[in-house]
Length: 367
Image (cartoon, rainbow, N blue to C red; front, side):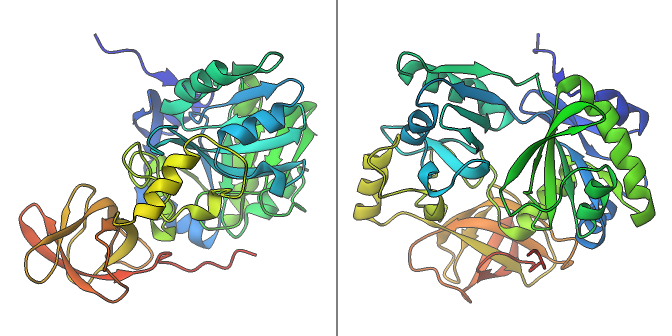
């Protein structure tokens, strides 16, 4: 028997809207909604506004004297480069191999409290590893089902959030703990689409009312509820990594060009020595973008070949870009590959010509 899928606090809303549902990290989540699907939802976010239920994302709390220092000793990014109330993208690496256990957002609340948002399927493993290493006095609790998360994304996102009386005057990756209708909500200025946006973190039971208010506030802007299908096409157009594709136990931050999220000058973090050793040794593949120059859609797992027919890489994510109307991909390519190279993606035995590019594929106007 298969384990029953978990559902978000907004599950009933998705069912009522007729959403197509699928398994995401053990959670039954919406892929798309009727009336136009991924293309319509993607366009709404690029041009106007859309909201996403991402309550399947993990939540964990690290609390106790020196919690911030402990978190900083675990993960790659340097928490000391920011100050509360600020959030930061970071990665949890395997200490021996520097493979990526997960990538996550850390909310720096205070010296004694850091709130973490890992990926759904990896939350328990991140929590387990932290609990195993935590010194006396530091408590790590899994709060996966204590909070919902709703992402509001698109050029009109500030207007929609402001219509609910929530703050929008936030710098990128800053957050504020505030109140809405008498209930606590965390408002983070962030997103995974390349557009201006916010991630709202209400308590679990408060999420449905907040969702309904956002749907109503979007109506003047022709905004849409959006599924995780559009979230994937939007992030791929930006070249943003997805764990299990561009980051994994086999794909390190060096390979993914994620060095900007690695505090190499920090005294320690899990995987620091292994990551440095790989960088010194060199020879590993690097992440690039591929833009198809023929008709077709590259897909994850497809081989990438040069003009001689030699395999020089593999696609980690691929899709038809709704904005560009061409196939695009993120791929791991052999050293020596460079921007402008003409390669071929093997799509089920059919050759799809493509050119090497530097993501993002689409440039947005986010300030």
